[in-house]
Image (cartoon, rainbow, N blue to C red):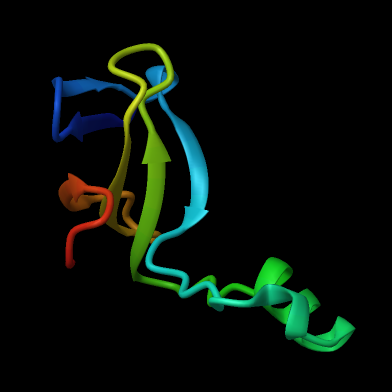
Length: 88
């Protein structure tokens, strides 16, 4: 089992968390101005790299807070976690 270090609660088992997608996705200030192709790109297209990746997680069975995690997708090694809204 993967142990994820919540920046608010400390290390916990992965079944306490929910993956919430790629971290640091920049959202446009006025999404109503996007055409269908640009909106689809914003909503569905993610980098999905092999290796080091910034992810967003939520501690659903703990503090309930969102946070970001730098994780290697090949080895599942977690480099670090940090609160959402802060720089990587």
